Length: 234
Image 1 (cartoon, rainbow, N blue to C red):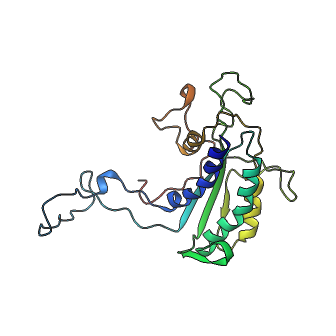
Image 2: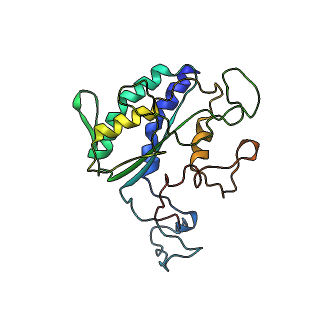
Image 3: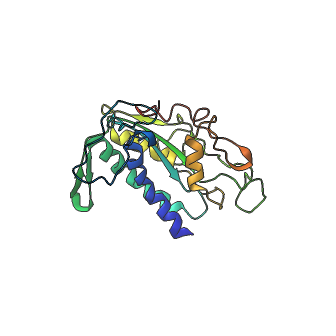
């Protein structure tokens, strides 16, 4: 379990790719045919419910959701994750991903506007009383964290539900503030629910998607404003 949990934390960097990719609606894709290379391309008749178009390119905005496992064995992994946050923010701000020894691994367009939220893996245990699940109903319920870790020097007790960053801001300041929020401790439920916590965080309450005991998401209520509209959300 410990090794699997370590992979969950490390894998969260992959959310960068998800957050920076614009959506593509299923009815916005031309059908694939086997008519051969000489077949005429389909005529573009404009957007319609049956005729698809590709979504516009990225706007340079990134809404990044970080999931941090707060179960009992994760203190070393959380500390390691916190030490890497400055590299993450630097890469977003500069567009340069630097590897071991200062080697530049990749360059891309810097992100001009970032919103970062943090949730933990504690969604309770469905009201079943089990050891380690002190809030057995819904735990922290996928609500974006606003509590700072005051055992760290310089951390405040509370923060906004998500942190914002633009090119005029200091990457060092954002990574420090983010570390205060992402250092979630290890008192969470041992029945970790990583994917459901992230999904519940961004799912609107009006969605048909429901969670344990018929509850709904927090995307447009407690976590409203975190996910910004994209050109494809209409």
